[in-house]
Length: 74
Image 1 (cartoon, one colour):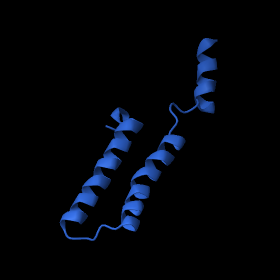
Image 2 (image 1 turned 180 degrees about the vertical axis):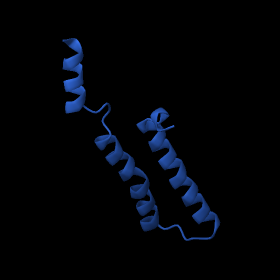
Image 3 (image 1 turned 135 degrees about the vertical axis):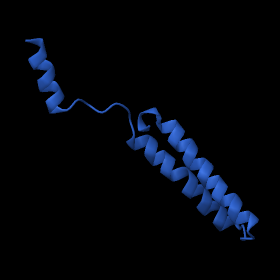
Image 4 (image 1 turned 135 degrees about the horizontal axis):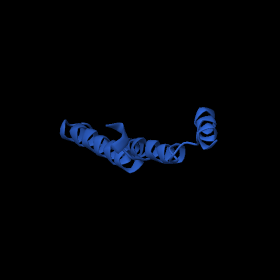
């Protein structure tokens, strides 16, 4: 299940959930001011940016994988 997730799907899911939460808040009567809008913008943009910086791609091989690969070649 988790192998089919890539970072763009996770970021899209994050943004969809944040937009849905903002919509529920607006429909429930919460006041939308400039500071609240800036807070929502930061809450929606900063975590995906951090995720893109941290989640680079395929991790480097472990020591066990390297040792196993050298044993198989012999």
